[in-house]
Image (cartoon, rainbow, N blue to C red):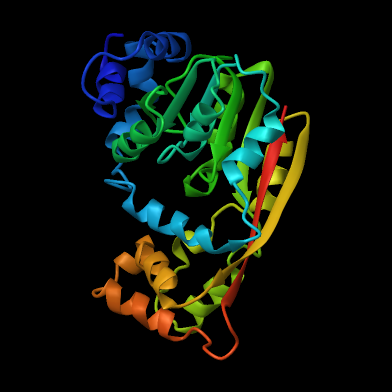
Length: 292
């Protein structure tokens, strides 16, 4: 596969030749080098948000305290009702949670993960060795028109300056008879933790806890671009037994890392946890929007 896409995708793969199935997936789904270069130019100029997946993994780890537990990748993929031979594109694949779930299900069709960060792609490679991976911008995907039967966009639209442009890209790369599954957080997701941080007046902006695009607005946006949007809500709560999970979570936030002493700030947040009422309870509310 000539051109920069080969270089970008190989940056995130392990050494040695790719399996034949992976090479075929890349050829089936990704554009050729010249077309991809134009569509990915913005991504090449942008600063990568994460060098590794350490911050994302820190935030994901707090869900070990969720009751009842929700395996979100499994719940979302259940909604897709895959046969097992479809072409799947995971846009903003991060460290590969959905790719790993597809692998666990022995999905036989081509699977491609795309992320702006090559560091994230390296982590995704470790979790899903058989997936094809490529660096790319969600607003200018290096993917052919109508290439995917299922396109995933989990917890990524709220990172983008132009979510509508990305939604149109999701629609472009998905077959007319295919599905786009978008995962976003509800208005009340992590409300108690947001209130704890806001009450300390440590930062002037909400950062990742204050998603730019939440579930209700995302549903409205997607309804303007797709004929049918079906919403599924997943609600639960975190029961935090002590300060350490909160410290780890808060320390991983970009807005906290901007502070002169991020560890001290995280410790200050955790020190304000109530201590006389059992575990600190934080509601979780995530939704999946199934678009066709």
